[in-house]
Length: 242
Length: 211
Ligand SMILES: [Zn+2]
View (cartoon, chains in turn yellow, cyan):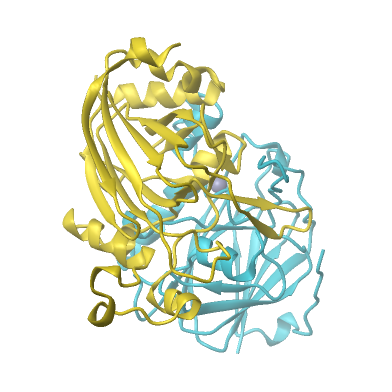
């Protein structure tokens, strides 16, 4: 499978600065490439069914059915309704974290100190809970909808005692992940440091978003066939459009 | 494994109930009270969610809980944090030693993915959560988030694999939690018939509360 055959032209590109947040509907048949521009980025990601927003990314269901705690190319991101909100069709990074979640305002202040708008203007210290909530609010969603998020580009391993270890340098400049939407998927994200990143300085990195129209859903072949579970997940997703 | 026993006697409990296999269950625990969940016959998954009784939008937050204890399994000493960052309960005794908080609840929809399309019409934990929540009225589908699977063992490998091991629980094993706020406890005593973890045999669980 070569990307040049399956992919249409780039539809749009945008840079999310470090600390930024955004949300949009990735339409069925579109693919989103998220690129770590400088290296060391982290993107906290939520996905929902754009047509019925009570249907949301369910990380336990996603991890359980693919027998994995890390997510990478060939994996699907499942909703609570057994459907594929996005398929990871390409990943140069190799490991995206499901454990770390996002910090709230108190936790950011505890970790990085005070960083108010009054002094820092748009360089003020943002936090993942507020950033995601603000974007959720734009779609009339709220705290109840803020579930486990996926932290792209970050790697947290678990040792035999169950302890976490944040692995630095998991993502280098130019590393990217591609998410194909087999249904209309509401994407909510923010580019902030991973909560377990030991860097004591508030220094979130920018990422680039690239929208592509995919001419053939054959691009999902790797994800469909990586496990029999994923074949059934795509079956459930296609039932949405009968 | 960190095993911690309790001095509490069941005769002194102010509340006792048995949840039959496969049933939903909801109760409240006041701040300062201790809740015991008891695996009566062994290797039963007790799928549990916790909410603040005064603000049901405040609920158990798996990612904050794991991050703040820097550990992927729950056991004695674990503090369960809410989505607002507040401590909700602390595990004060645990004779099982490890509880899963990543595997989530079974559902009709996830069963079709995990097992087979024709398992859709079997009973499931998420159906239980919805039934109890919608009868009670304070909770709805939006409030159903990642739950704890007490007595379940779902190890994460150093390579990032997720494995489903045979249960480490047994008849009479229990976990006790002390509440830091008034809590709504929402349980599905898992009816899963497709998973070898419980030898394809869901069994009852007991709930006790002490002042
Ligand atoms: Zn279940």
